[in-house]
Image (cartoon, rainbow, N blue to C red; front, side, top):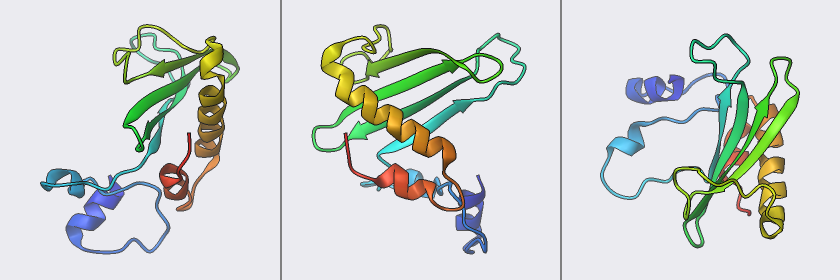
Length: 134
């Protein structure tokens, strides 16, 4: 939210920020946007019993394919399950391709991106979000 508020106020944050202004999404035309982003649900009490998880969603701009790689964690942060979905052919994420050998390379790349995005900060996340690859 902070980058959007700063954009609305027409100011530049004096500290590095990793978020992006949402204002370009409200304008007509082509919107430059990131190729991947981190999705997090931290290990906090959830009223719906949703387990903690981390995921990275990525779009490959060359052919507009999109995929998501997700890791479910135990309450103490230990990996309990991993999933991979081709959002182009399975937009509702019904059939995980995690065990499919033909998706091994994509799975490893997205897992690497997820690890990097988990650790980024101080203005470095945008570089990771925009990097080509997959």
